[in-house]
Amino acid sequence: MSIQQNLNTIKSQLPAHVTLVAVSKTKPVADLMEAYNAGQRIFGENKIQEMTDKWEIMPKDIEWHMIGHVQTNKVKYMAPYVSLIHGVDSLKLLQEINKQAAKNNRVIDCLLQVYIAEEESKFGLDEQELEELLKQVQHDKENFKNIRIVGLMGMATFTENKHQIEKEFKHLKTIFDKIAASKDGISKDTINRVSILSMGMSGDYQLAISCGSTMVRIGSSIFGSR
Ligand SMILES: *Cc1c(COP(=O)(O)O)cnc(C)c1O
Image (cartoon, rainbow, N blue to C red; front, side):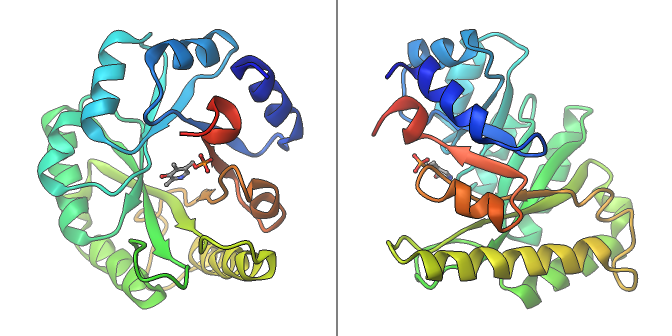
């Protein structure tokens, strides 16, 4: 199957409200261009250097999403162009994104990464840390004019156990709904439009969508294994 065929198959399975991020990490520009020529405009990368190299040479109507863990000292390299940062998990990082966005006269959209897996290795905030972070941003909103928190991101445990994965996705959806509906403590302008729930990858995106995902990050099912 070609990249174009893989893309078409996946897109035909996605409901209209679900956005597809084509995860192109480690893949050569020729592969990304094949997806681009098939109509794909949103690409996800997990390393800033690699994403920036690709951004420099590829068409400028592409939306670049940073899906990996972000080191504070590297934010400046993507601040001129990045469309959405999925893995924000600290106030310090949010402050740096705001600072670099301001330098570039931009407002950068961010997702807060929530820890839902059982594994130790995954990054993210727990529910309490998430609420705390939202409150801090709300309290100090004059200093966060160049970022927008537009939703949440999560990764399920790496397991074959579908029940486990489903439980974790549903948990994240519950947190998402709570925050999106929240009236006290967190006002509408901190979370101007918490509308994106980024969950689901090649192996579990259908399950994620059935649990409420609005954005799936799919790599190997489009571009082949890495
Ligand atoms: C690599 C990666 C993906 C895509 O994984 P596939 O299994 O290849 O679809 C999705 N999300 C994140 C955060 C990733 O690092």
